[in-house]
Each structure stands twice: as C-alpha cells, then as structure tokens.
Image (cartoon, rainbow, N blue to C red):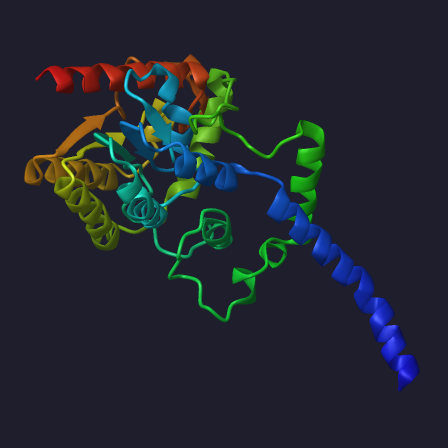
Length: 309
C-alpha cells in the first residue's frame, strides 16, 4: 500500500507543479483584464467619456483623438452581459462621466449567455476585474483557480507570447487596443469576409434579453444625466453584404427605437459609411489604427457638436 501511495505521489507531483506554475503565471502577469481593472479603478475621477463594447470598439475607438477625457473599457468578445456588469460596478465611481459609448454590432443583440465566446472569459472577469458574475456557481472550482480555466496548450501559448513580447497587455494607457496596425489586400479581405460572416451568424433573431440589458444601462445613465451614444461600428462592405439583410434591418430598427424612446440616447450608424475604405480595416470587421483614428475623430466631432447645442 505504501509503495502504491508513493507511485501515486510521484505521478501527482509534476501535475501539481504545473498547476501551481500556471496559477502563479495568471495571477502575476498583467493582461487586458487586470490592467484595465487597475486603470479604471485608479484613474476614474476625471473621465468624461466611457467606451464599452467588444473588439470593434476596443480596436476602433482611440481616446487619443477625443477632446474629452476618455477611457476605453471595451474588450475582445465582451458581450452586453459584461458591459452591464462593468458599468454597474464602476458608475458610482465616475463622478464626471458625461457620455457612455456603447457599440451594437451584428452579434450584440442576439448573443446568448455562456456560449463559446465567454465560456472561459467569465472567470477572468470575475477574478481579474473583480466582478460578481452570476453565471459562475460558488462550487465551481474554476472560480478559484484560473489555471483550471484554459486548456494547457492555450496557457502554454500565452506564456510563449509573454516571453516573446514581454507583455500580455494589448492596449495603451487609455484602454485602446493598439495592436491592429496592418490591412489586407482586396482579394484576401473578400475571401475572409465570407468566413467571418458565417462565424458571426448565430441564427437567432431574439433580441429581447440583450435589448432589456441595454435599456437598463440607458435608464441608469438617465438617472445620472449621462448621454448614451449607440454606435454601429464600420465594417468592410464585402463582410456587410454577406450578413442577413433582415437581421441588419432589425438591429438598426432596434437602435432607432432606443433613440426615439429615450431622450438621453443618440444613434450613430457607420455600417454603410463610405468614408471608410479598404486601408482603414485590419480585417473584414475591425478597423486598424488608421481607421480607428478616422472613426474616433468623427465621434469626437459629433460629441463637440452635442456640447454646443
């Protein structure tokens, strides 16, 4: 029996060591989640504009080009579910907030909870952004250990990326995703547009749950005299043409309804804006740094006009 226990112990020691090392890595190396949490928690007294949303606003709205003090709290694959949790957590600590920019993209209103996009991210929101995430049960061991959240190959890749780049933070001090610097040629972006459009089609036209969340965010802003700017971010025309016209129309109608029913809501639709060209895109549905500057300046122009009205 003693010999068996010894063999079991020798087998478990390497596994335990890998788990400990992975846990220390996730707990000590800053990433977008931990870095943004630190930034928004410690530098929030003078923020006039807060940006929420997924990768479209994360890469597409650069606070550098807005006149008002802006922080970008968007993140890759961040859903309305987490936008709402983040906003509710920080709103009472943003005394100067005048505007909230919230993106509404093709997947935003129909996105289901706890699907592949947030199946692992929810634990990082909980642990590294100090969010109480109802999707996570108290008895789930992943709630207490980030090393259990991702497969080993994903953790190993993150470690190699850290060794190569020296950081896992993919944004600047104002929260803007500053790593999208290139573009595709016309043939490549057309090809990728088809794949991307298929990936983003969830087949759902049920907007009820996420529309309710957006309205609750709007109501919270209304109580605090905060203006809400709903933005449909620019996308490449080849990608847009491959999306469901019926669903696009319903999305635009929903945004217009938010605007008409709420005096503190404005809607800007960049989806078919011809000012955005091929060279403004990193890929079919994300702006690069040049496109982000253009988009940010247009939003800034709109906000400046709002302040003079």
